[in-house]
Image 1 (tube, rainbow, N blue to C red):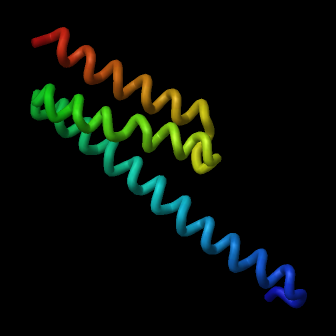
Image 2 (image 1 turned 60 degrees about the horizontal axis):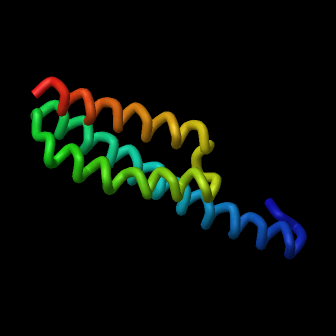
Length: 90
């Protein structure tokens, strides 16, 4: 347990940040799932709309340091490629 006042504050800050990061990561996972489901359903409009919503979310998470910037770029690239190949097939 923390003894110093500054250590107690650091613990409070860490917990707040942990909860915020967890919320952001969960939101990203949910949005990725929505994009993949739309592609599975072969609903191109729904997939593009979901992709347009997830890109700023991932970019912001990467810029804030919640996820690594390369991880964010990789997610965006793979989802964009998935949606674009869906359009080429139909």
